Image (cartoon, rainbow, N blue to C red):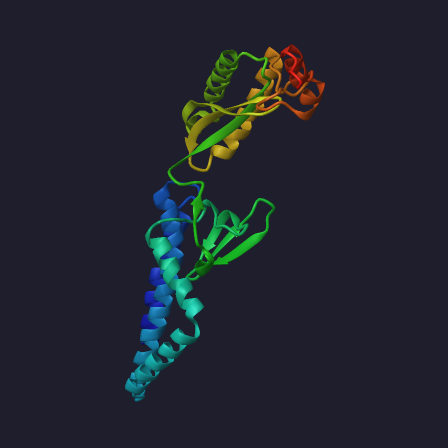
Length: 280
């Protein structure tokens, strides 16, 4: 029986290893999903095979397995009550994986400063590596929300500040030319789905106007495309002499204290024009 169990395990393990070897971590979503689920399937199969083989061997050597099964049920119940966090980790992780919220290779933000690339997913934890190289091991029970930045598609967002004196329509035309140049890059073109998505004027402050531009990209490539976009915008603005900010702040809204102090006393001027009051 032991030989049969080992043969079954080697057969399934070799099949899973062949599948994993043929998958690219940055490939299609179906490949990422298989890379996530196959290691979990291998672990589950190992547990099942060990349990069945152990019980069968005990039965063959004359050991009654009925009390063992009953005892295992009691122990399982006790462990379930005593390890509620573990049970919560497993159940939450099961729903996250079944709903395909994350996969190995995704760039995610799990909250509580847990942000990075998923390197591995176990039965109860997610292991990810942040931009500084630190590894975060996050139990599924601590995952209250999942922000996946590599799902389906993404946007490279550029928030550009220009001075008030600049012609906004001229700036938009320059940005359109920049996006055309970005889309003409043979290395970046396969990752760009929509090269120009102008969102309009986002905000005004004392010295500049903020414009928002988006480029729709393949999931996971928004960071590379965004850096290239920022570089081209800087070059274009230097070429056309576009100022990013006004040297002196603009007055927006209510007058400042200095403006009120410098203004003439309007009340005194008004009272001087009124007729003198009669006295009794």
